[in-house]
Image (cartoon, rainbow, N blue to C red; front, top):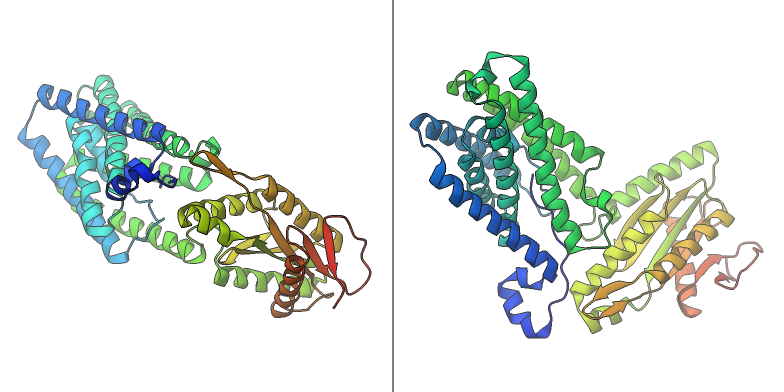
Amino acid sequence: MAATSHTSIRPRDSVSTLASRWPLLAQRRPLVAYLIGIVALDLVAIGFFATSAPYRWPDALMFAALMACGAACIEATRRLGMPAGVSRDLLSAWWLPVALLLPPIYALLAPILLQALLQVRVRATVVYRRVFSSAAIGLAGATASVVFHTLVPDVSVLSRGEGTPIMLAVGCAALFAVLNTALIAVAAHTADPDTHWRDVLWDRESAILDIVELCLGVVVAIVCGLNLALLVLALPPVVLLQRSLLHAQLQAAARTDPKTGLLNAAAWQREADTEIVRARRTGETLALLIIDIDHFKRVNDAHGHLVGDQVLVGVAATLRSQLRDYDVVGRFGGEEFVVLLPRADVSEARRVAERLRSRVGRMAVPVDDALITVTISAGVAIMSIHGDDLIELLAAADLALYRAKELGRDRICIPAVQAVPSSPETAEDATA
């Protein structure tokens, strides 16, 4: 588990130089206060448990062995590669046993060591995110450790196969996952208050991954309690699972536009081709939209590319929220988006395009003391009316988009092969 990337805003001129050196200063003040508070709490906890915890050589040896296994997993990650946006791993398989089997001070130190190794060996990211991730994981692990050691004073019973200690270990592992996710979710929501809580907590995929991590951590803790040498047998399966997880994430990242989270152009074309073949086989209708943000260059020129990226993200989120699950939406490049609407006829395509135009027009992106609003223009093409394959549909929709811009932007255009009723907001191209 790791902290998600927090949304940044354009730094004020008075702190722009400092912000370039210290990216934390470019964040929202509530977020800065929250991050500093969590890190300070983590440091206080380290100081408290460091002065009160008993130190024994068997504990130090177990801690070193678990950290060595974590380092081996990190090396496997480094060889596979971890680009920006790919942040899920299975390192909880190593620091959960630390929390369950060792005093709380070790649970606070483990993420510091592994996050530092990730920063050096895998991918260097903004330092404050690594520090916050270490603090969040450390506090969650220390809490789970205190609870488990309170309920099970003799942790060696965990390896005897008794039901009660194992269930308590599972409960404390779940407590660790909940606390860690909550701490990170609060940071993500503080960074962008407009984000829905459901978007920063669990979705189905992240919940499944957390359950897998929880199970792995408890199993490794039991194995470690039986005999420390058995970690040699536990390490290869965990490394294999982590490499499989990262490979799946890399495949997903290769399909996704990194700024907006939508399909990239190549992935969208593959999905669109599949839908067109299916529609041709079944005889169903299908519509294609090309959407362009009006005067987007003015936003970049006036407010900077960082704010322009926020506008792109906002438009992408608005488009996605207004479309069906099986609609295919992607970023085509620059400020252009493409949408494929399976089973949509002319009326449905026009209704969807107009809804998108209206919703984007009401969207506002906060920056400094102002709100940025944008409009969109769109060209629409219908299969079997304006073309029979993807190239023809893209060409027809692109011509319609060009016509919408000629007519003043902030409007929808549909090539008029036959007479189609018009509306005040919808212009139609007179040419085929």
